[in-house]
Length: 72
Image (cartoon, rainbow, N blue to C red; front, side, top):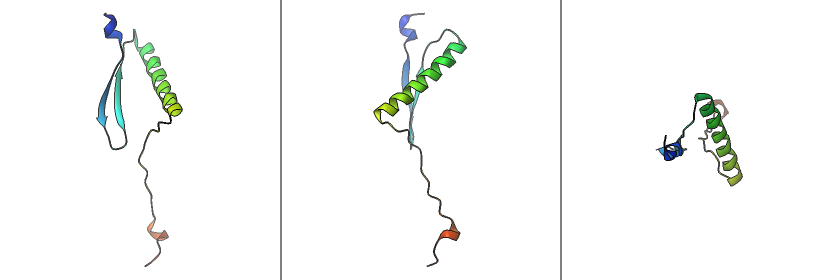
């Protein structure tokens, strides 16, 4: 395997309403290492986002119950 094949590659896969979806591909010698490395990467990204003030967006909904509305 060439050294450049082991380099992580990150691509934008979708621009959603409340997210920019990314896919990271990296080389690992076996499945347990790949799983552990993926978990470590996700944790590292979240901690970096927190330090930099980047919030992960999600939609907000306001629910108003009909019984709570004032009659007009």
